[in-house]
Length: 437
Image 1: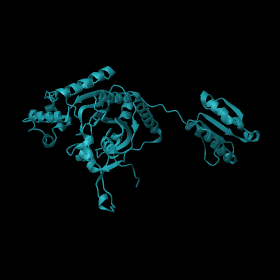
Image 2: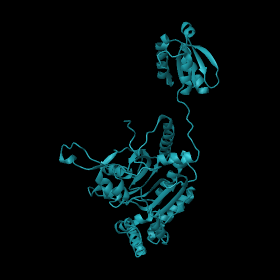
Image 3: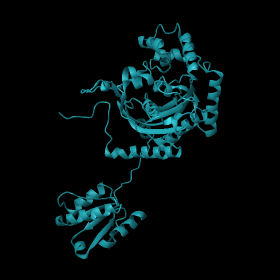
Image 4: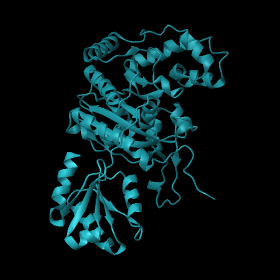
């Protein structure tokens, strides 16, 4: 029986990899401009990390967490439950605390490009293994609304640099932890008496975490929520002032946004600013990325092991690479891939194959991407066809005449022009032609 990739995962094939690499390289270039450093965390963590950070009542923890259990446990210390990471923020915060990064660094700007895992029902734009580009700014210097504006601007800058257009940015503020409590109380009061006809799941969310109703997919629930006049009534004076400065800064930076009072995001750790970027052309799964501020999570996950002299602020976002590629495809924007193969060396006779390999090796050691045909003496015509399929810029021929004269024939595959050069000048001549091409 043929074995296929697990349902909800996908292979990234050689012909697709250039588009991925373009996004990754563009991301790294931009992150450098914004002074972000890369961090890489394990693909699995203790399950408790996600339950404590994301919230026991969230859909990610209740329905989507992919837990891993070791079949061989050698001691009690290892008898812990693990889960493949469903998102990148909690592992980064865990690392921030574990290595006490904030002791020396006033503001840590970190980014990651990594696979995430959730027990999703597989569908277009929603996979069990997916990839995210994420950024997190954490530290005592991360408490200013200007950082919220910069983080949102970076998110938009990335999308535009990838070539994505026609997306929508929505923002909202949940306020401080106290503001969120007031918001939850107001929501329960406003919804009291209106949930009797809703589904059991919605009723459960009303009891466990009323915020989940704001991003419910249940149409009856959505209709009820639409009837609420939410506004910013839950925000304290300081919360309103904070949000106003975020908006003013975004205006100054030329970032176009829409204030959406119903936007809360699906994870419990968010406070103050939250945002989401979507592209309608993706259909139901239209979110390209999202993020927000999560003040308090650092202390929450620290477990009380150390005292923080000043409040530690934090804000971040994550973009889905698969959805970005789907958006680019929907917009007809494909990555143009230029072949990385500079030269393909052809053997005029089977007995010249060893000389061809030596020539290829010489070129590679001089920084010229080169290859040859290993088809056990295939005809020259077939070797030319192989060079053409690989998109080689130049073909070098070692035929009988060339072997006698100590020369190599260089053919420009774009123009058809060809010339013979001595083996001693091959590298120099080929490099000059590559630069002109």
